[in-house]
Length: 176
Image 1 (cartoon, helix red, strand yellow):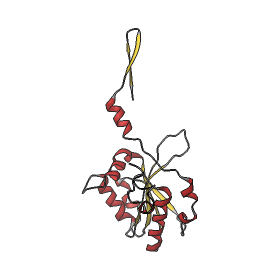
Image 2 (cartoon, one colour):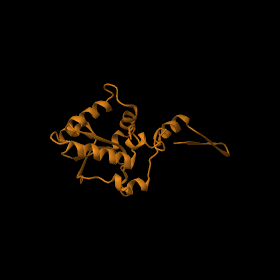
Image 3 (spheres, one colour):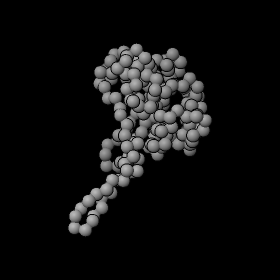
């Protein structure tokens, strides 16, 4: 936090620029665009039954190893005196099982291999508040269609490949 220093009879303050930089690192933009939420072309053709778990290596075996579908990373602040608040950061799909994909993200979070920079930043800054949401979808074509529609609807901050951005210049590089 910015530190306030008292000098003699007067009052002066000083800014801790290191801390200010750290705070600024936590600022994110989100597209909250009702036109996309209400667009009939963005509505899913399947009903999703969402499950979630705190993203942590201790929870790996709680993730199904016989289901595939759509998953999301969501930051959920813990603040007991306010209603539940969530921030959607990433949407993905997997035609392999959820546990395998979850395990790969655990490796990314540990810095193994070469994780994508936005994904790695998400893991580093919000690791204690990050939740993994997943919904089973049996048909591969429904998995891809659902992911594409969700990406186009919410344009999550960490995703870099938004299908509509390929044809709609207004969405290209929206978070730069």
